[in-house]
Length: 270
Image (cartoon, rainbow, N blue to C red; front, side):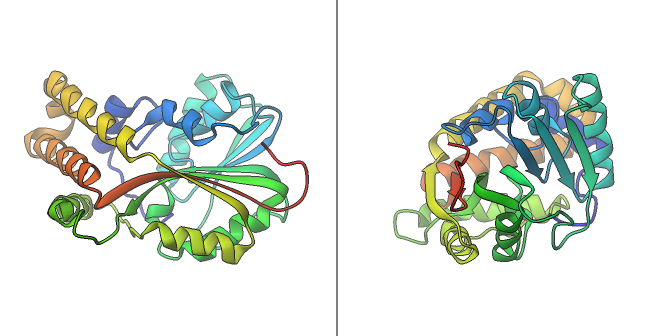
């Protein structure tokens, strides 16, 4: 998570047009279910780490039955919009939202049964430090459930798609978004160093590639609306960005993964 506003109102509107209300990254609500597949969320206390504008928090509390969800984020505008979404969903009694500063989490030890985070750690420069914080605020037996974009292996098989990955990353940076992409090994080493055990990784790249192709088709069918919200240049950049992401995923220079890791002890969220 970072401490400056990264998403303009126009970008927020266009992302939600593509991904669904409350979501700022591909996959939307459907991927929330995929990330927590096999886990028991009902009746649990959940931290939505990097909650953005509240889509995942609403799914965790509403459709997955979490007893309490705390959504935290570093961007005031996002937290404000999340509060509106949660209020509209009738979930304000079970979902609370908090603006935090980048760095150590301002939360007590062993406070949550589960941590959910979707496409957030790719914004974080020091992933091991935040993974250690995640471990600290989980109860024994608690689970860390994460979906994220990771850099693919630099191998002969992936090099043909490397220009597409670099174009995708450059376009994100040019639009003002701050990312720190790392290979999966950085996450795995950080989880182990923090003390997590039973780390499960599922490659989600093929699904993400197909979802990207769907978004390209949607961008074409909804071109007038997207052009109005983004302007012609913004629209063309959005299409080019999605196309580069699809090519990078297909060629392996970019991966999307789901990670579940457990803090030892307790009865867990399995």
